[in-house]
Amino acid sequence: MTLDRRDLLVRTGLLVGAGALAAAGCRSDEEARTAGAAKGLDTWAGVQASFELDRRGAQLSTFLLAPHPRPVRDAIAEHRHRLDADTASYLQDEEERLEAELLQAAAAYLAVAPEELAATGSTTMGLGLLYATLALGPREEIVTTEHDFYSTHEALRLRAEATGAAVRRIRLYVEPATASEDAIVEAIRAAVTPRTRAVALTWVHSSTGVKLPIRAIADALAERDAELGKPPTLVCVDAVHGFGVEPEPLAELGCHFLVSGCHKWLFGPRGTGIVWGRADSWADVRPTIPSFTDRESFQAWLRMREPSAPTSASAFTPGGFHAFEHRWALADAFAFRQEIGRERAAERTRALAGRLKDGLTDIPGLVVRTPLDARLSSGLVCCDVPSATSSPEAFVHELREDHGVIASLTPYATRYLRFGPSIANSEAEVDRALEAVRQLAGR
Ligand SMILES: Cc1ncc(COP(=O)(O)O)c(C=O)c1O
Image (tube, rainbow, N blue to C red; front, side):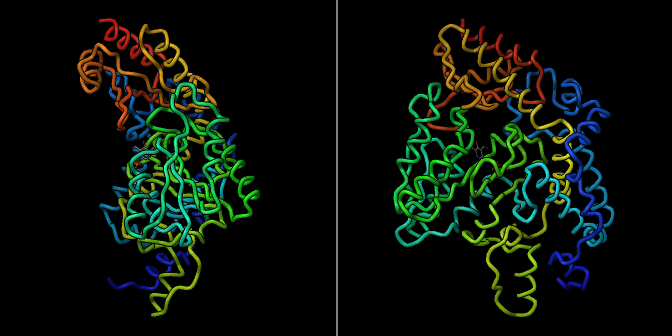
């Protein structure tokens, strides 16, 4: 590949177009909500109409992989059209502006600096990159929990296999429904020893629907580190089932690294994700995949020398060309969410999840496993599969085929029936799911 000067500037991020400064994220929340109202997003029916979901069924598993709302579909179509018409010119003319806009829109939504964000393709990609290189001293360890997903456990197992790094798993609760904030915080605090370099946690457990009190955990760990007189324990969080639901600004969570896909509850383009690191935490990881946007490494390569700068979010951002029509439409997803409003979306999701949990609790013999308390839960709702069923898979199949209710099973050793009511759903869809479970459980 030969690069002309403009290619080079684009690749190395030296060229910042004026357009980048007018990124979607520069609007105030109030301006965004006014724009949203003009598009009908001030009613939940209007938000639901943004999705092309097949409403013959009650789609209660959109968190698995996002259906695209209208602004995201439109943006993808526009970028795809431009790329198909003249790929090279679109890249040369617009790539640096669109890359900057996506980071700006993400940063505005998350209330962090764009320089602290790396764009990835999924949660799993972000976790893999993070845990592959997180700096560990010779006798240091990473503590994780029994409740995390495969992506965290496997990334840590591969790290241990490659480097001999020590990884320890702890349990935070036995019965999810009665999990307690104090007990969770204490379990993590008690697990930290002078050797603990990092804790690898998941914000909302996709195994149970339990939401961890990340801020309280981070505060307790800071205290514990001070008692032990050791460097900070890095708090690393797989945030994917809270991201796009929970309203608090990212920096208020108190973690050091937060990893998320944008293609679940956020309803961003499929195949997008982010890693956020505190400005002073990026030095604790190394890039794995060569970055196309990092000026340091690319410039160093051009000059045939070694890059000397510490890791930045930009250097951590995997390079190679991407499915750009999806990647760049991420800015529109954040703008869409700003137009709906974070608090409003959080309240709506909680209300629907609460309605579902209350209804499931009323079904005789059915045990709801996700805490009823909104402080310890989010949008995910898990319950036992009714015992009269031949298999969990058969139950989910019957829900879909006989009742048009799209649910899922937790992909863990203990299998729960799992729903994820979201801003794309109505109360009627939740009630339909309840009626279906009631009928099937009562056979
Ligand atoms: C907790 C958790 N993390 C990560 C993932 C994977 O997300 P992604 O598809 O963005 O890699 C899942 C499920 O898909 C999950 O439940």
